Amino acid sequence: MHTPLILAFTCLSTFAHACGGNVSSFIEGVKAEAVRQGISAQAANQFFQGAAIDQAVLRADRAQGVFQKDFISFSRALISQNRIDNGRIYGQRFDTTFNRIEAQFGIPRGVLLAFWAFETDFGQVQGNFNTRNALLTLAHDCRRPGLFRPQLIAAIELYERGAFDPQRTSGAWAGEIGQVQMLPKDIIDHGMDGDGDGRVDLKNSSPDALMSGANVLSSLGWRPNEPWLQEIRVPENLDWSLTGLDKKQRVSDWASLGVRAREGNLGPSNLPASVLLPMGRNGPAFLAYPNFDVYFEWNKSFVYVTTAAYFGTRLSGASVYDAGSPSSALSGESIKVLQRKLEARGHDVGGVDGILGAKSRAAVQAEQQRLGLPADAWPTQALLNAL
Image (cartoon, rainbow, N blue to C red):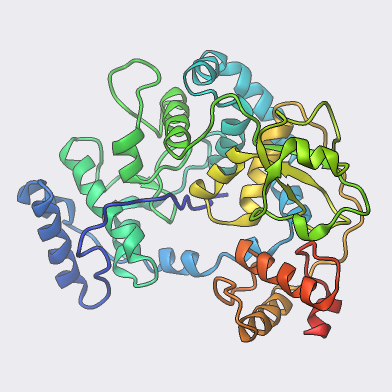
């Protein structure tokens, strides 16, 4: 399963949001911008020979309904016994690389194994979209040009360096390349030679891919040798309005409120943390530490991030979560109805898309508080009716 990495980028040029219109004219504009950034005109011209818009990329971009699933459904779909078994196998096979990552970056192997599994099934399914055409398509499309135009120019730079073949380089529909699916700008900024052969090959070298992925996480703010997510037990009388990723307290404060680790001990007492209830007060419960926030720099989907972080704990030895007995999830269409009602009350839900993301959850919690319902950010039919 390919899930697009939505990484944080800065320093977009004045032209970063130019999009749409005649494709040939658009390409000429990109070439001109590339040259202004120091890339040779010859490289820019050669890069685009035979380039074309890929309608399959646009269809994939518009069809991300999988993120409408709730956490239990999504995690059970992605975390198979086969992936768990392969996680152990690949963890042992590349033990030296993971030891190096843990020593250099302080990132546990379970974290990277989880991303590696979800992005490409440990390098086995890297995608067959022509990367140049995918990036051209998404840069030309006016949905997210500010993200993809710099990536297209970065791909031209990689081509000029001899590290990208416009005709043959392939990957995911959103332009990511290699075993942990990195976009061109991140390859330039954070690609690492993990196997010592003098080049960065994210498609064929697992050590290169893993070291590069670790370097990306480090650049996004990963705090070395700290936890990221931990399953907890929460008391039935907890003030649910205190929960949610936008509310943090020290671990010691949560402990004083009755929060307990389901296994082992809670993290360091002075760490800030949030109580995360992906399916409300009757479902699984986690303590999210500062490193959990880094996941949202890798991918913006709440359910993907929570599942990837949880899978990282499983690959590090944690047990299967206690699913509890949460209220039934609303359908994607019902979530859209809910989002419209929340927008009508002045909440920013991040768009009406049927996906219960962080903004929608915060709006749900605010309305639950207003209506005197348990404010656990999990929308129910009762809330929908009350609105």
